[in-house]
Length: 279
Image 1 (tube, rainbow, N blue to C red):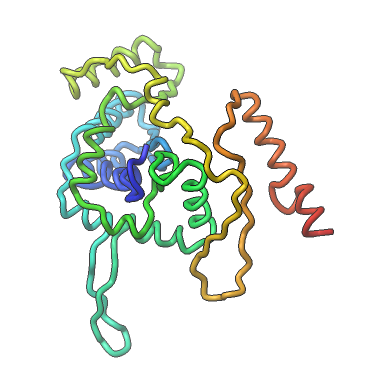
Image 2 (cartoon, rainbow, N blue to C red):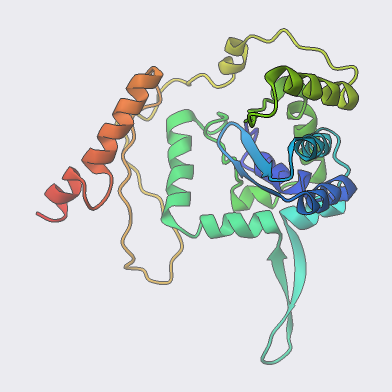
């Protein structure tokens, strides 16, 4: 989970499988191995998924290379700065004057997100529901003002504390020609090779959840407004309603309430839209 609004999880998603010698090797190996992959940063975990049509041996080779790049990256501080945020020179196409410009893949992506109402509203809502320094209240992608403060040491410290086998999991989908025993044996060999001295930590899931416990609700019943940049000052806004973050629903009830709210207030075909907008 994030430890600040600088977007460390999101930044590592960009760096691990594309930067440094190992990251570039993984990218080239995937292309030569008929593989496809993607990744996304959720609030409390980053997910990487990939597959290949070249057979099981190629799959396990890719798995090993990707895991090695995640556990033992070798990207440079300069690669971190260029991927996160840096200053560049821009030449005007008309009069050739030079000016400074903020650059960086992560920075540009998140600036785009915060130029829309949803990015700003969810960021403000997270702070209201969980508190300013709660992991679920931080921006996992990165808030532009905080991204500007990112230093290489922030990334390296975050990687060291999060990217180890005790904090990682894998879901492997097997074709019929690979037995479970064979898969587990191969994965064991890969793990033994990459992390020969690793051992399971006796960490109970409740101890991890303690870090994500809900704080005291201070903003129940609060109505507030947040702004977002737009060229049209009359651009319609969005109304967002949230319950306090103190619900304890099991999985069936969480699914049921999601289905109910989707039908009741989930867009132009919903009951709420019919009553308030199309009335």
